Image (tube, rainbow, N blue to C red; front, side, top):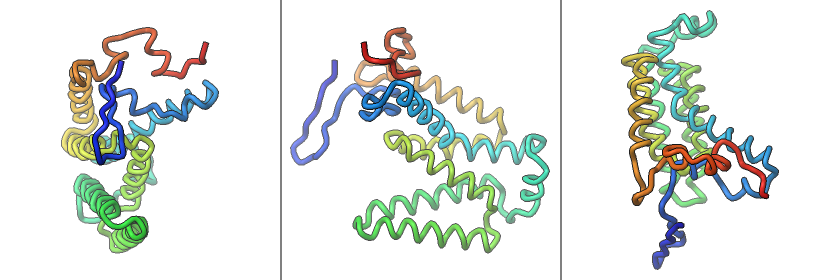
Length: 219
């Protein structure tokens, strides 16, 4: 059972409780064949992990585990800007958030153009001047684009992405693992209007998994 909330003057309806797995589901999933809907579901899970962890993993590996990188990437890192990789990643992510917010607050006719022009000019100028490295800009861009796949989780992803970058810069893969465990424990313990946020995964319900790991066919 769900509760729908309609507020006068608001063009949206609020449905409670909202579960974590519903951020990876959409109405389009139930218009496709099960195999394609399942593919889209796993694509969203992968995009979530990329959006959340890719910059942090790059920073952690480059600073603390360079043996995991190939020779080409090591040579590129040796010629990077004077800023540390952690500072680079946080700076690029903050600039992106500023550009995104500016695009949202401006009129629709101008906001999209401002975001595109600002991204191209700032990105090209920063790389040309040597302030940031090309691999870092590429990794951050991929992470940001992956976040667009799951817009419902954009606010927590924006904050956690910065936290994971800091954890990776300070503690490497071990720091990312510790923060990931803390976030996972918090999600599993959280509730939404009295319902476990991670249901039906935790607490586990076998029947509910028919629409989590895959989209089962209709009987």
